[in-house]
Image (cartoon, rainbow, N blue to C red; front, side, top):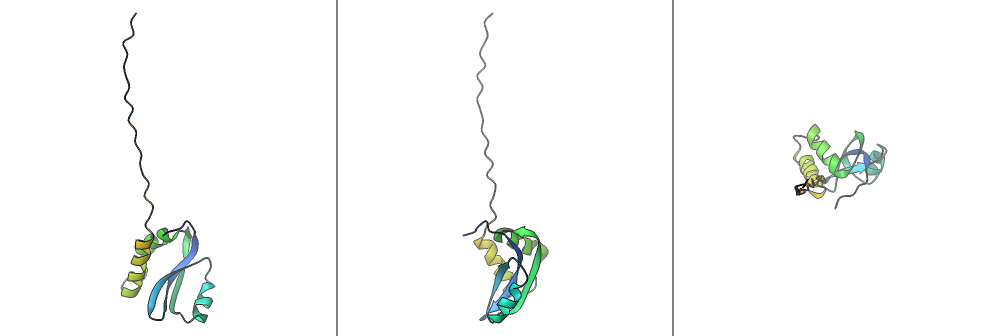
Length: 103
């Protein structure tokens, strides 16, 4: 279930053997994750505030964690859980009747 909440910082951390994508609004989140026992914390500032779906796409586009299977799996999970909303293109056709005008 994705939300419209936006974040300025994103990255990954490992806690109890599980690597997950982390979302935050500033890099001070590193300290909190460290205090709570997270290791391999890698947070980066995003070019602009993004939703989780946008962050997942951005991480793939920039090659974040490429070569690290745990990070790639965590990013793939975020992308799966937060699909990018696709714009629905609605087209309507209107039948126009031509009426003969009698003079």
